[in-house]
Length: 87
Image (cartoon, rainbow, N blue to C red; front, side, top):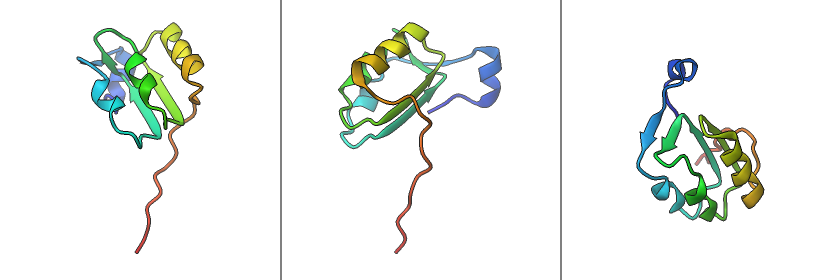
């Protein structure tokens, strides 16, 4: 999920009431929240995503992003391109 690219340079964000809906799928492996931020600026709701392998964030406080990665061990790498099965 991300805001439109022109918003990045203007520091605009899309505020959501909660990240709880994102934390519910059990098969979530990679996540990028770029300019999409909950009102409390916290990533704690996503910490319950036990299958998460990588997560990238923009417009969050640096300390919160560092806390999230340290607490979860989730990698701060780019989301890989999706793989589609043919057939």
